[in-house]
Amino acid sequence: MLKKKNYKFWFCTGSQDLYGDEVLQHVAEHAKEIVGALNDSGDLPYEVVWKPTLITNELIRKTFNEANGDEECAGVITWMHTFSPAKSWILGLQEFRKPLLHLHTQYNEEIPYDSIDMDFMNENQAAHGDREYGHIVSRMRIERKVVVGYWKDEVVRKKIAGWMRTAVGVIESSHIRVMRVADNMRNVAVTEGDKVEAQIKFGWEIDAYPVNEIAACVSDVTEAEVKALLDEYYSKYEILLEGRDPEEFKKHVAVQAKIEIGFERFLEEKGYQAIVTHFGDLGTLEQLPGLAIQRLMEKGYGFGAEGDWKVAAMVRLMKIMTEGMKDAKGTSMLEDYTYNMVRGKEGILEAHMLEICPTIAEGKISIKCQPLSMGNREDPARLVFTSKEGRGVATSLVDLGNRFRLIINEVNCKHVEKPMPKLPVATNFWEPLPDLYTGAEAWILAGGAHHTAFSYDLTAEQMGDWAAAMGIEAVYIDADTKIRDFKRDLMLGEVFFK
Ligand code: MN
Image (cartoon, rainbow, N blue to C red; front, side, top):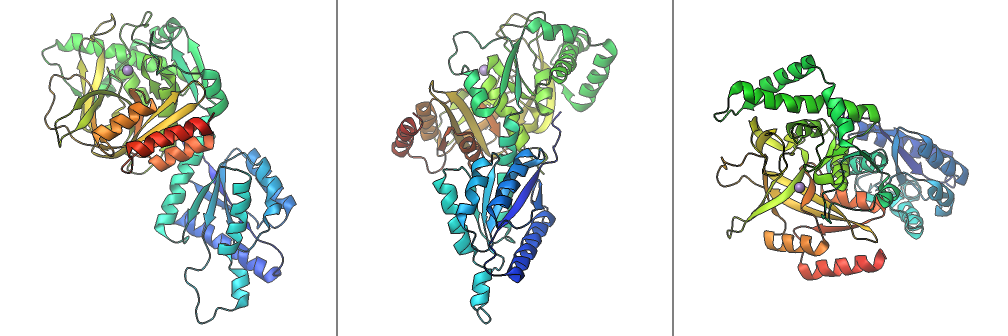
């Protein structure tokens, strides 16, 4: 499902012809060498493509427009090797519509003390040229990322790599289509929102389907297909019968296998990459989709519960942004359930009725069947597990009536102190930064939801850069958060985004 696209990033070097052809030849050689080294490093998730040096208004404009039109190009990396008069960039920048990175580097790492002369100064003046270029981008109020440092430095490469994932998130956002199976849960505010504005801002298409249309697709799944998937489940997961009859248990699991196949077929046929369900509106489905949804999330689909289409789209987006990452630890929808408020052991137990993505699991994953305390269907099968330790980022996109706000909270995931043998759902447990009290206070002041889109594999910086590219407000809750400053950030947002 989550097919890696062959995105590329163009590397455009700025210069001018004032210093003659030899200098321009060096500029091109140096840029090619940098591109080669970036690609050979293995640190970048996508390829960088060298482009001929940009020295005229016409070529700059043409190159940016070609980047706009090239479906494989997910963004442009710019670097001014020498001085490049920035008025030449105005038209090109004005017409450019994709993510922009300003790599502020230079060819030489060290000042060549013994040999430096004015020829060297003229040829190697990124410190000078990049300021001229940076000025025009700022003056034009164009959103871009600036990365500063030596191009052979691993830290710089990692920053470029992180930005590339954000850029792909920006490009892919407009390809996200969310299928709503039933409406939002009645009377719930925070899972609602302006779907037209979401399409304008993020490019998301959010469409509703009658639940029985997708249920009919589930009914059409053959017994042989269900049997094959059941075999996969039974070989992959531990079966926790807990006193239930094995055959009866298997029948419950088979219902989820049928839902997984039917739902995926329906989503594929209609071209959706994210889905919401609602436990109160299941039509002819025999169980609330639990295990089925968990498996779909694992395959890369976005999901939001109780009709929460914003979370569904965000989970999908974050899965795209982390796609193909080495040693990825996982991305899922989660819900804040209950606190541990014991001093020194604080944290939030994260779970949902059923639907947590197994990519975040640590260790073995088991199948359980248990009654739901909500809804009116038979006991749904679900995957249960606990999650990995480590840093992650929890996000909540809320609609404030006049705008969207993305709340970004860095969290520290931990193991719970003791097992919870009676809890029949997958869980995570985290302490929000800077601490539970400040983190939760800030989250509530910002209007954050109980549902979150969470990932171990993205940073607050990447999510904030995505929000900036979308032109929406982002607020950060992290180690530096102080409530007084945070309230001022919210106040500034009220003014700025009016
Ligand atoms: Mn929920």
